[in-house]
Length: 336
Image (cartoon, rainbow, N blue to C red; front, side, top):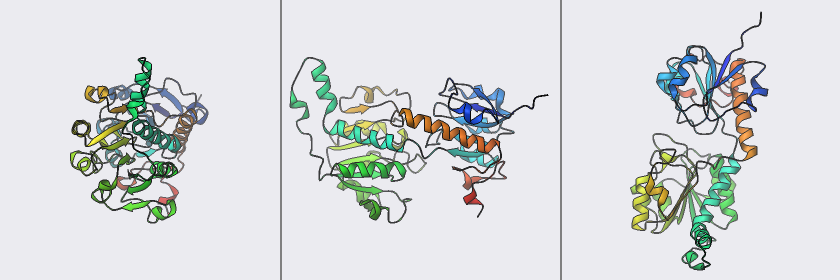
């Protein structure tokens, strides 16, 4: 009689598990839901052992309360704000992420967005596509070399972006109260200890912070007002880190010259003010993607689920601070 394998759910985003299967097929049965509706998880909640989640669905306290056998939830990506990590921790369930993929892609995308708005790429392109050939759209564009950019958050991606911005000749400042002391010395940046210290110096701002209660709307009316008039804003982090309403007001007043957003507060985008604004450049939460990066993310997420199913220590635990009676093996670093 065949022994039933533990059940692993892939909740959203994927239609097939061609990357995950080779990692998990020997130790688990995979069920792909490809849904954004959390109640679709309910029929499997009581018996699932591990969950792989992307960003199209929320794993709420309601769902977590039903996870009677689940050892862990792995967010295939860096941000995990769509998982109730406190509710999971109270039930002994691990929440893990995949922080070490796509660093290069997001950093490259941030630089691309900055160059596009600073050099007025879209108006020039639109003019040519409509039959024109006028350079006047680029009039007023600043020289980048010697200007100052401020990074909000300087983890893996922020650091990678900083190196790229430095290569363009920009002076790089950053604000990140959690960054390792001495990072500024190692990379050749300048550390600021508050937004009030950093933002008045910056023509350009690039957001690279995770979404937490403290970073929600970290760029709002008050913080945007600290910038020099005519500044440029880039966000490749999390949509709610930047207030869309505040961005629109700052663009209308001239406080912002342009904004480039890969992420918005509500996705898919439903704010027509941002969609149609001539000084907003939007990309559809695509900064993370490359062929290689997407494969890497999925493989590493599946490997973390495999460790959970096989009772091996997890690697990228994010809710260790709120755990009660864990159902899984803690990272080795937590056991010393």
